Image (cartoon, rainbow, N blue to C red; front, side, top):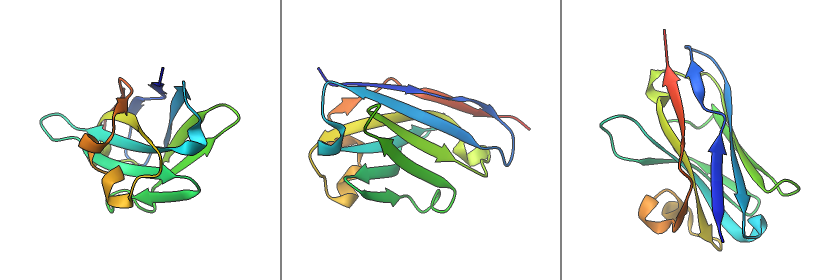
Length: 125
């Protein structure tokens, strides 16, 4: 049974850093594509990053600030977020696709069959 559990959310201030984790089970992490998505209040869910094999991809809004990595020893995918701002507020989800998905597909939520329940990142001045 594929399972994904996000953790690490919290309240942040301008310029803070935060590390989110997606702990996976029920599948071999190297054989799946993992995407991070976020959804701000009143907005649609958007793809943020994708890790596919050894390749990583980023949305323009986070490129240079966010880093995605995976630890196959612990079956965990991490999202290191730096220089956070109000625009980064939202519920962050990790999602999994069985196989190596095309890059553009990894940023589309409808392509991802497996999801975690999310972790909340809020922003305070």
